Image (cartoon, rainbow, N blue to C red):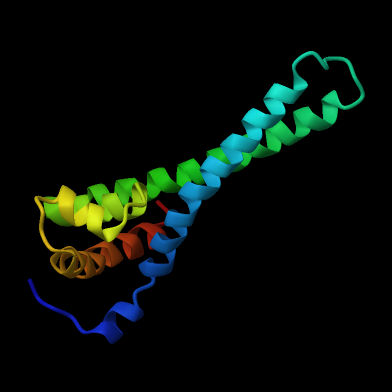
Length: 139
């Protein structure tokens, strides 16, 4: 596996995209929690003046959640296109499941975190090709 330098890694367009997907997971959970909150509050309040506002908020949250889930699914499909199974596992663990490096390394047979990051960094170049092709074609 060819080691690329750090400056090359910093120029990859996919890095920001993938980092946004980590935060998207937290946002999805946060919005699901809020949706459950409002769903609970609406029970027994059907026909009151507050019901339409709560229903609108529920619809907004559902649309946001669905949008973020669709984006994560698109990212997952791009990760699926990585040919190296270890690299694919590392990218999925990091960006789909949001796992920390220690957990990723342990789940990959107890490799070192340094090795997991090395494989990750090289896998980003493969992901960049897939990402550029997917974004460029609008797929």
